[in-house]
Length: 358
Image (cartoon, rainbow, N blue to C red; front, side):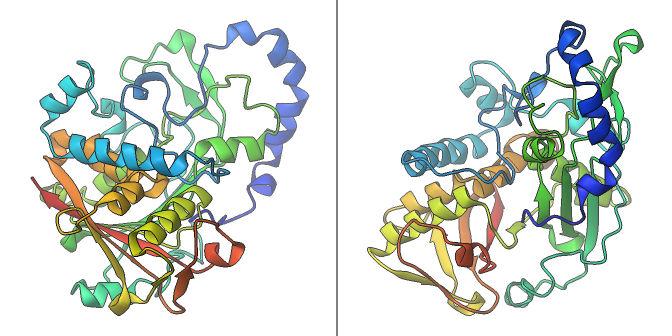
């Protein structure tokens, strides 16, 4: 994930020019803009535990692994309890996504999202998941969604109660989320994405600290949920049937570093990530030591999948993840430690997380 589908600097050049042309104006009149932290969890969403980070490439810190293990344990616990129990565990604050991030159609087009992006390369996972589909007896009948935040829109502090007198310009971030679904089998596939923060920094270098209003749709878990509800619009009885969540071709440095350290410790040395028939399975119910499972669940790609379930209990019901398979489509990859090379990022390492009812 993280492969750019098109050159956003070219498509959105007018916005970049406008951004720099008006920089002085913005600085002088910054007080006129209502504060909006551009972190992935902001405004009405910061109460929902840790942000999912989507696909931001981060330099790993020494504490990343231990933090991921602890985060994974907490997420696993929160997923497996009721909506009300999760609220109590969160000091009385609901972990459900706000209503405006729960439904389609919703705020996406108002805030500058194009929801029918054409890309001849999509889906980017091509045939890389075919062996997994065959092994799981899943017919590859894909429904593809491609959303891009490529237009200027309107920003309201509270989309559920918009104040037209205080509407602000919603800056296009250049973020995009490509997600595929196999509806009848409850399959969600995270394919190609660039989240709001890194996209905004790339679009407007130096402006990310000015608290400029941008879309409320910042987390993969919320975008994927809205895309899922759109895909299920004509078959609403399928909404609560999610069973598999694939994360295809993981390139995120943090996720891979955490995963490699987890697998290296799990195996007590070198370990090979093989093709589907030689995949690595981490099972919290069967493994004597479930640390590797929790580490992956607490990594960016694991936790954004957990948030998909955790933040949408009202419509999904109580679901959890107890098992994940790690595999590659063709050339096996040998894990020799926690370092992540460019070759590792190009190895097309993928995962499938199994969703079960509690």
